[in-house]
Length: 98
Image 1 (cartoon, rainbow, N blue to C red):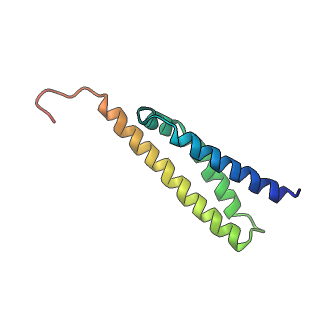
Image 2: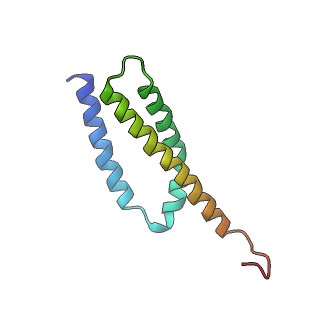
Image 3: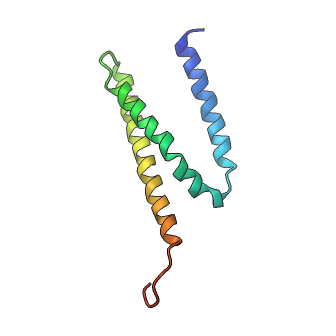
């Protein structure tokens, strides 16, 4: 079995496992879980940038790398925005302000 075939199998297994795990997360835990996964998404951004900028990358690799950079960056930014919104919910409000 070639390394590329093994990589595809690992990717498919990780995809199915990830989907099953996310489906089973309680809605109450979703926001804290999302804020903790920002570090993983940041690692994905760095990896995708490395793949996209590789000198010997194919056009398909560059396109998939660009899509990965875009998707992971959106995930990181969205996670921080949601975490910020969640933390604002716990701040005490001053009387008379809404």
